[in-house]
Length: 168
Image (cartoon, rainbow, N blue to C red; front, side, top):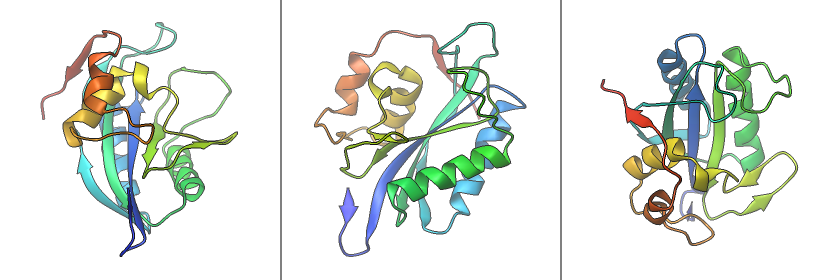
């Protein structure tokens, strides 16, 4: 959703980590996102524990979702998120779904639907990932993504998975 009076857009970011104290990685990333000019936090979900999506010979993940207001364009926001990943030791070695210190995914950016080489919005895997849908539903239960699918419906149809909300 774009807010015409302020020029801001509501966006949602998925956060994940399974290396180097994953919960601490997410909290540090949250703080860095909040410190980014042009971003204001709206909500931050609980932390969730889940098995890795890809190769199973890696540690389990900790995930969360953050809702923000931003004046940044989608690509500028993506670059800011990738910079935070880099600052926290993320190495992009081409391996898909491998272990990582930090993974920041731009899930939703207002009502935008983009399909660019470097960015797809809504995030292409949003429908199959309970570790995204559960925290997203926690902070935005009535959200309808830009292709008119409700988060609640997506969650009902999401493949079952072992995911557990972590206590504070």
